[in-house]
Amino acid sequence: LRPVRNRKNLHVALFAHVTRIIMDAENKRALGVEFIRDGKKHEVYATREVILSAGAIGSPHLLMLSGIGPRENLEQVGIPVVHDLPGVGQNLQDHIAVGGLVFRVDQPISVIMNRLVNLNSAIRYAVTEDGPLTSSIGLEAVGFINTKYANQTDDWPDIEFMLTSASTPSDGGDQIKKAHGLKDEFYDYMFSEINNQDVFGVFPMMLRPKSRGFIRLQSKNPLRYPLLYHNYLTHPDDVGVLREGVKAAIAFGETQAMKRFGARFHSKQVPNCKHLPEFTDEYWDCAIRQYTMTIYHMSGTAKMGQRSDPYAVVDHKLRVHGVKGLRVIDASIMPRITSGNINAPVIMIGEKGADLVKELWLPKGYYSRRGKRERDPLENVTSTDASLTNVTSSDS
Image (tube, rainbow, N blue to C red):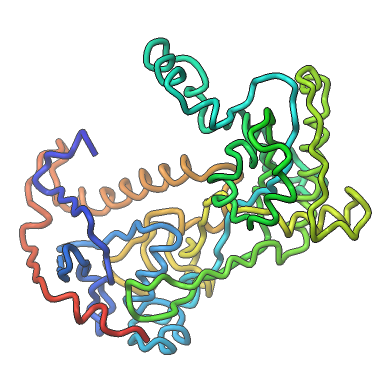
């Protein structure tokens, strides 16, 4: 925001929580937004459009809180239906990766927290801009492969490898196990013997999942989180893709290039899968279900598509179907998740969304083509503020 932070028509409200889109229900038009800040409720009105960019969880949540979404779920929690749009919250996709593929090495080349976080490392980085603190949280390289499940007619890989100079036990069980959602007994059985030792990890991440999840409201209270049903690994092909990714990851760790460091696979069997023959397809299918984690690339929950698609939420200009003056511009509009980290694609969506907004309003003289503001889009805005009581009192 730095280049435009001083514009008179830019207002950023810190520590604010948007609770709903203010709708003209009769005409199905978005009028503004309601938000909570400092314990009070505020309403801000737009003169042209409301743009929703709350992400793949927040955007469908706000649409449903505003009466736009699947009728059955809205009526279930007591929200008046403004527009029945079944696709809101559907088509949830994410990138997930298999954890626990750890390789021990004989050389001090790993990111180990009790060796990394110290005064010497800090001074070295400050003086020379070198040393272990230059590592991107241990992520050293990524690579892409096609498994036998990949669609050979598409130019899309289905597995991304993340090579890390650290792994699950690299902080002695302090924080990584929590981030991966591992129980103490599982972690202790699998990794306690290699706590704080030199290791590297390979995480196979599935890029083109076929499983689809969904989001539902559990309450009309905007401060209660929605219910997330990820449905990870419900499609059998997803398990197969990750299984082939695991095999390729182990083969990579055993190449001559890695053998130079004395690399050897930490081949401890996952507790709940020990009854299966070691490292067979059946074993890996079981192990994958025990230690698979999200990479936090949620997307697809307000997907772009034609009006004839019953689960499409926005059109090709990112306008919400059946609603006037409302766009969604974020990762939720992806019909299918991209084959790689979604950060750059989401930036592209934002840039394209901005172009679409300008494409509509610039020819109408809303702004001059030289960029000089001719009319302030917020000049007619009114706002009110009220007690938070009315927002939080209902929990049904």
